Length: 229
Image (cartoon, rainbow, N blue to C red):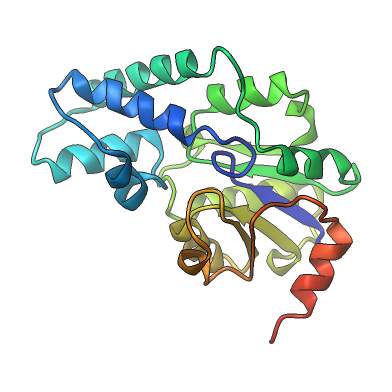
């Protein structure tokens, strides 16, 4: 396989901030007298963007919601999220190092369910904001993750810089099993990192790795090319 573009999920791939997101959701839900456990979050809600998290969670709790209420909960969650990250940015160093070692000729994109201000703020702190030709956040799609629209929008963004780019030449790096399933509907290849889920839950990915430490683009191309057709 020749990799001519790479799409990165953000949370759990570049940034190990799921704990901060969980804390933000927990604190926001307290306003409605609701609680959320870490096990619940990972099992049922982790792949969702903020809006879909609150919509699905409140629906599961048989609670009514309206757009204004959802907006307030999202803002409250974001406030607590940034407070949790004030002391340090919890980067996933092997992935950040992998990005920095890539040739600038390889176009990169972000496909995330996070808010744009969260993504851009952290990438700016890492001096990586300009490295990504396309950033697709929760605000940029109608149907948030795990729906494939986010990945397809990222692919379209990469194609703007290279009209001959084909889906099968693009590698998506994910950490969620629902994300893996979604990527496969787009025709792109998927590498899953075991940051959040064990390997057995990510088995549908084309390649499963613990980290990107020591990996090069050429190494990934060789590993993916050796897979059974």
